[in-house]
Image 1 (cartoon, rainbow, N blue to C red):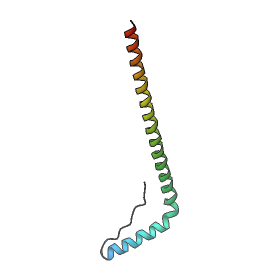
Image 2: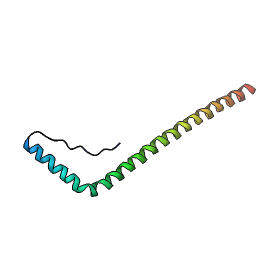
Image 3: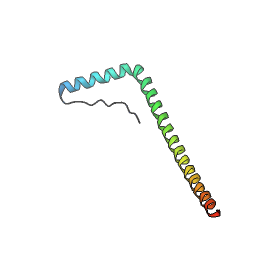
Image 4: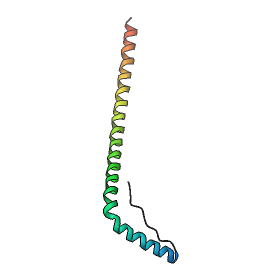
Amino acid sequence: MLQEPRIEKSPGLRGSVSFFIKRVIRRLSWWYVEPRFNEIRAISEDLQRSVVFLRKELELAQREIAQVTLRLHELEKSKSSSH
């Protein structure tokens, strides 16, 4: 799942100033970034649900194909033994 990037503080005065500026920019830009971030997160979750659904459907189709194949072999055997 998507998570917002972490702001890490580097050592020294430069790191402290950089950390402070990044926090200020993040707080000032949340109105722009947050809706897009949430939209991307929602799309990612929808895709994940779709993949799970499709995986289940594929497994079901594979089981059905196996059953049909088995039934076909049984019919072919019964047909060849009746001749």
